[in-house]
Amino acid sequence: MWFVLFLMTDNMKQCLLISVLPGLLALVLSCGQDKNRVDSNPAPAASTYSVASPRKEIIAQNVLAAQLAPHDQFEAKTTFAPNEPIPASLYLAASAYVERRRIFAFLVSNEAVVEQQSIAVGANEEREAFDFQFVKTPRPSGTYQIRLVEIARSHGKPVLLARLFLNVE
Image 1 (cartoon, rainbow, N blue to C red):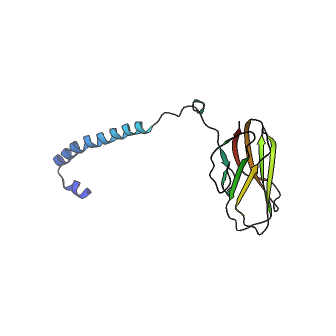
Image 2 (cartoon, rainbow, N blue to C red; image 1 turned 30 degrees about the vertical axis):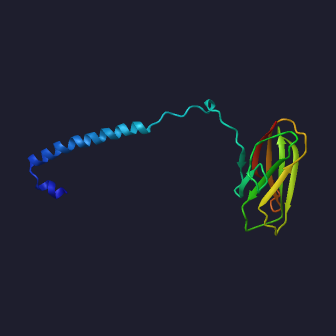
Image 3 (tube, one colour; image 1 turned 45 degrees about the vertical axis):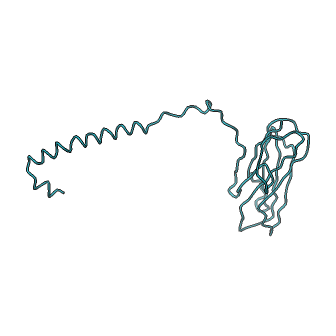
């Protein structure tokens, strides 16, 4: 490329410069205009949006899913009647190391435990699906959580696996 420019006369170089310069200038200006299109206004404050509360929160890495329904059904609702049973299920990933543990489900309202259930899992049991059913009624209307917790024998410390959010009306 430089060799060709070296062989060109000064008059030819001027003509080339005059014909290329407007194109380069247009390219630079159009890039500046594109940058303005990319810049965006900051998002409005979150308070201006009506944000729904979360229905579930998966916390532990070994949790594949949690829902307000038995494990062989689909979750259909998050609002229950005061005398209606509340189902919940938990799916855990298969683990190479299985030990004795207990899976707890706590039905909680205003930080007070309303009802609890637990399922014991043996050292050689490779169970992955856990179903719970809360049947103590009547329940007062309000917002509730189901906290799914695991206590393994090796660490003895409760580990929060997931939380499900629901309403009783």
